Length: 398
Ligand SMILES: Nc1ncnc2c1ncn2[C@@H]1O[C@H](COP(=O)(O)OP(=O)(O)O)[C@@H](O)[C@H]1O
Ligand SMILES: CC(=O)OP(=O)(O)O
Ligand SMILES: [Mg+2]
Image (cartoon, rainbow, N blue to C red; front, side, top):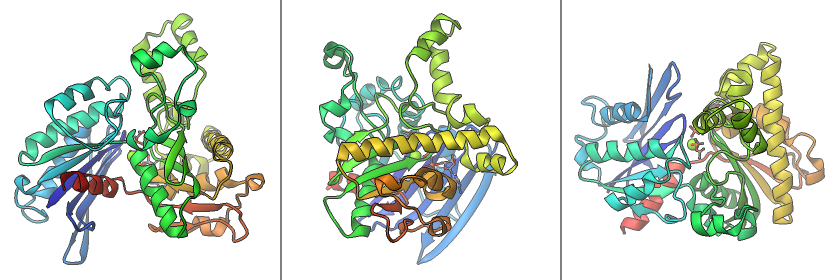
C-alpha cells in the first residue's frame, strides 16, 4: 500500500513515500527556505537499493507551490517513482494543532476540515499551510484516504498542573484555553529511539527539538509530562522567527503605547522575532556565518538561544525528579554543534558533561556526545516525523 506523508513545517515541507508495510521509503525529500529568496528542493529516490539525489534551487513562494513541485517529481517520466497519482492509497498529513477535538490520527472529512479551520488563529504559521496541503493533496491524490496526524496528540498525557494557565477557570472550561504543546510526533519518535539506543525503558528524558520552530518536552517513561510550547506554537524557546516566552506586558505596551493592532502584534512575535529579529537571519547557517564574520548581534543571539534551553533543562530535571538523557533533534539540534556545546557547557551540577570532539562529528545516526563519566547522557537523535506518521496511518487503516 502506497502511503505518501507530507510534513508541512513553518519553513519547509518534508515528504516521504512508503510502500507499506515496508518502512524503508521509496523516495523522500525536503523543500526548504520556503518564502525566502532562494528555496532548495532536495529529492531522493531509493530504487533497487540505489540512492539517487536530485537538487533544485528555485524560489518557493509558499507551501502550495512547493507541494505542486513535489508532485511533478513523483510522477516525472524520467525520475518519477509512480506512474500516476492514483497509485497513492493514503496521504498522511502532519497537522500541527489539533486543539481539544483531535488527539488521535483522524481520517479527514469535510466536518474535520471545518473544525481545522477554527484552529488557524492558534497556529498561524502552520495550520493554514497544513490545511492548504490537504486541499492540494485532495486534488492531486484523488484516490487516497487523507489522514491527519497531530503534533498536539503526544502531549495529551500532561497533568493539569502542567497544562493549565493561572487565569480564571471559566477560560479553560468555556474556551479550552490551556497548554497543548507541539512537535509531539517528533518528541515521541526521538524519545522512543533513545530508549532503543540506550536499551532501557522507564527513562527520564528531555527532548529538545530545534528546527525553525523549537520546543522541549519532559518525558517520563514514554509519556510527555510537560512541554515548552503552549496554547499555540509561540511560547518557550527562542525560534527562527518566533519570540518564545515573553512577558504579556510587552503586548499591552505595544498596543496601548505604540498603537499596534493585534494582527501587527501577531506578525511581530510570530514572523519578525526570534533569531530573525535579533540578527536579520532566521536560518542558523546564515547566523553561524555572521558569527564567523565577527557580528556581535549574532553572537548574543546564539547565547540567548542556548541560555533559554538551559533554563528549561533545569526546570524539567526538577519536574522529572531526575534525568537519564537529553536529546537534541531537528534541523538545528542535529546539525549545529555550537548550539549543543553552548547548551551543555557549565551544566555539571545537573550531571551533563559534553565531549567537545564527539560533538563535532557529523553523522545521520543516533549518537552519544557526552563524556564517558557524564551522569546524564547527551544524545543526538535524527527525527523522522514522516516515519512516525506513516506507522500511525498504517495502523489506523488496518
Ligand atoms: N547544517 C546546518 N547547520 C546549522 N543549522 C542547520 C543546518 N541545517 C539546517 N539547519 C537549521 O535547521 C532549520 C530547519 O530545521 P527543520 O527541523 O527542518 O525546520 P522546520 O521543520 O521547523 O521547518 C533551518 O532553519 C536551519 O536553521
Ligand atoms: C510546531 C512547529 O513549530 O513546527 P515547525 O518547527 O515544523 O515549524
Ligand atoms: Mg519541523
